[in-house]
Image 1: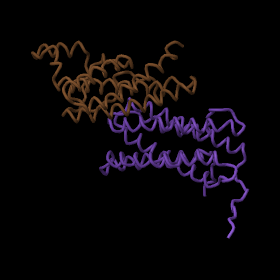
Image 2: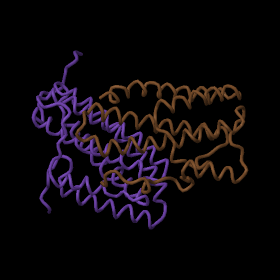
Image 3: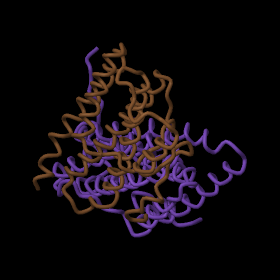
Image 4: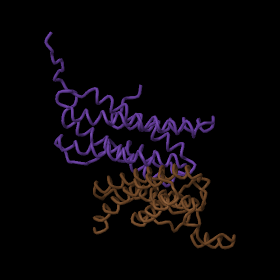
Length: 197
Length: 166
């Protein structure tokens, strides 16, 4: 039986749209890198400090590969762009929990809200890529998906350990809810605000 | 996020005590402790590892804050280089913690002094001395692991040069 290439040539996003999304992902990764780097000095728990340290470098590499893809999409290299002002506010809100006793909130912001959102977005974008003419984008997204999943898992382990009582777990959930509201209001990293139903 | 927090607001583990070098030296004298440790003793290795642990945590915090506070307008390559340093320092802290465990030491065993150095060159000298000491007291595992840290420190000294000149 002869082999048939069943891949189709349909595509979802244009070159310009892909570049736009890459700049927005880069914004999220770059900001997350800076936020976690700044938190290292403000976090008392050594194990959390070290995990932030490890993930800072991963986020830097994510921002770098996204930035390097931009010239291949007729855009300026290494440029970040937030989707809209509410997303910038969301990132600032997430970053502002910097008291020593707010490690739980810091972990929630990154590992329960921002990274899971990015994982979902990267996965959706990956599934929309055309395998004939978008393999460079797919390679980048595959790496982002794989590493973001690993980050979330590690963060979840830290959170399970730190928020191990009912009051601390409640704190974590309330802060997650607050951030989720802001993230939804901003329309996520894509900046698409859905009409409230 | 608050920019450039003052030293007193930096967070450390509950077990760690920060004090000035002069105060610590005075306290040692008051308690009748010897001015220096036996150069063939495992206690010296433990003390040296702890000192490296403390200074590496401080360096990790400093580089992290630099990345957060003052690199928004700098070249992207510089930010990447800082990101790599943050990862390296995190790994080194982990190595020192593991080696401390091997010699029955622990984080917070000795007070942290505020005069700890973060210079890669001086840290390299301290590492070379510790490797020599580990070999002398028959601890090849520590010497082997520390040599990998020293290799990282050597490349860092070379990589710092362009920024130092600029």
